[in-house]
Length: 68
Image (tube, rainbow, N blue to C red; front, side, top):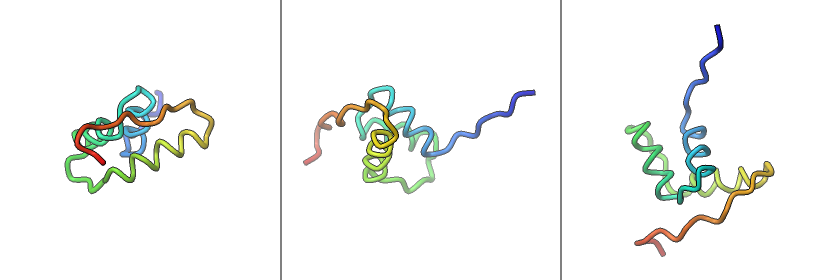
């Protein structure tokens, strides 16, 4: 029997970012999966930069409406 991979906040965030989602969209997806989490936008920035450091071709986040 194959070992089931447990979804984590990080895995959900990375998956969303790799799928081309903006940081705000990725955060919304994380909060939908983990409604009680305290994850903030800064975490999405960290995951995006971490993916880049690991060699993934991750685009800069789309400008989210309503952000500075």
